[in-house]
Image (cartoon, rainbow, N blue to C red; front, side):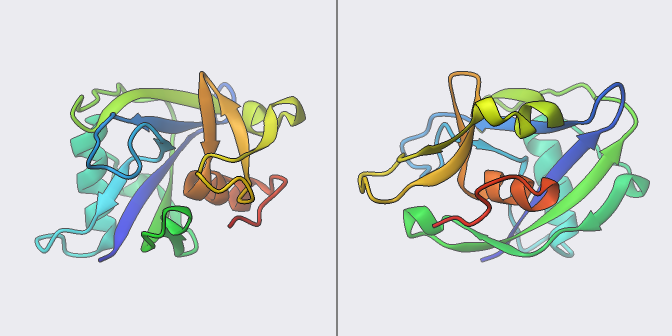
Length: 168
């Protein structure tokens, strides 16, 4: 099974990225995590870009115009820390202004437009041990009452050349 996510960037008045917080769901191993909008490819999806566009609309109510696609980013596995690896293609989009976000409450609990300066702030960079194994540490950035880590952090770290890009 493959998946795709939308890395949505706004550049004015400062560069910001859309980050959602997944809804609490005991059946979802990523319940409550910060992430990009997106999800698994369905059989009716023509390709991964179509899956990305569909999932972004379903989760956030955002229709991404075709000319807002900057480029696909490197295919990356998500879920390795949870022993549920899935190949995910992130697609980078750039919009001129932040669109209205209409979250599907069954999938998303909240959203943030996180500034690049926040992501780069050394005072907000940290290492966390979110799993039962205290020897498994992950680079993260503080966000609200939690931490952005794992796959989402890895994608942003590669895009922005953040510290601690290696992840376990």
